[in-house]
Length: 116
Image (cartoon, rainbow, N blue to C red; front, side, top):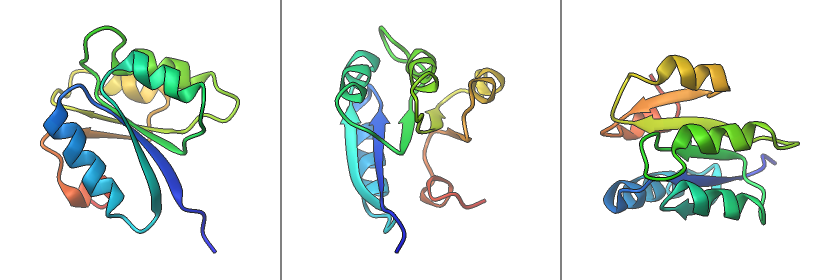
């Protein structure tokens, strides 16, 4: 039996955060969706629980998505990192940090699920 995933959505915009959490929660391979409205909350959450994948907005006040990704990358078992942003400008840096995907807003459900 396949392990179901625990994922984290880090997004400062409430409507986008709710939409992503709902889309991910509807996926059969996802067991639990945790949400954080900013990078600091995400880092605190990561200190108390293990996640399999993180969906990070890049442009957020305070700790941005790149900052959170750098924290994730030093964990003993880092989760898969997917950036979800409105700008293509950070793609090279994102993959340099080790992102497995880079999704542009608005989110298309088929892209969130790993499709073309």
